[in-house]
Length: 243
Image 1 (tube, rainbow, N blue to C red):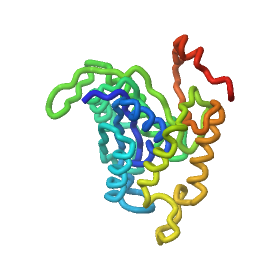
Image 2 (image 1 turned 90 degrees about the horizontal axis):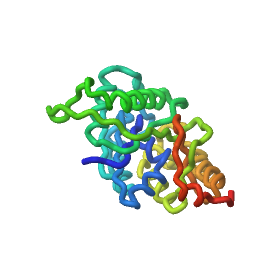
Image 3 (image 1 turned 120 degrees about the vertical axis):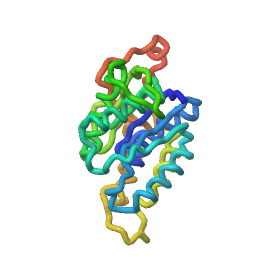
Image 4 (image 1 turned 90 degrees about the vertical axis):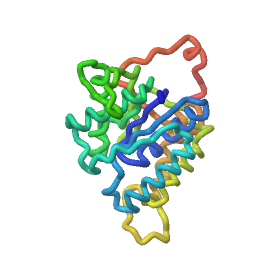
């Protein structure tokens, strides 16, 4: 199945936290979206890898995505290597998306940085016929997506563009809350983490509100592109001047 958009994430919940509102906006407009998680998040302090997989399934249903895979790479060890690179190339060729999303290339978590590098290189090399990959034993054709965009995690950047997620913000939050082992629960006996601190949810809401305000909307999600982006005349004329 070909997809319109393919999102790569280091861990289950990364995509929902970073761009869940944009994913929902895409799927609600009938675009075909998929997520590929590189690890099962087995090093996570709270919950377990098996619980995380069930949570990812629930979140995927909420967001109405068409495909989700987990590559089961070793959590905490996402670094560039030829094996990982070829696997990611094969997934790009399998789904043939028009657009890729990946973590921004500078972040607090080393796995996010490693994922960003792998996806960027895989996007380029997926277009080279002399790099051979197979899916179910069948040789794949070379294919390269049109663009790669980077989503924001812990560290911020100056956005290339901001997506209005006002209509899908609460769907984003519902998909996030599907990962209930990861977030604040006063009854939990597990150790507190960076994202289980109750202030973390307030941070996610405040960031969405901040970037929404930047474009004259209630909520927004920020993205970065290393290349220039073309705007049509309609895009130009429909810019909101209320910010």
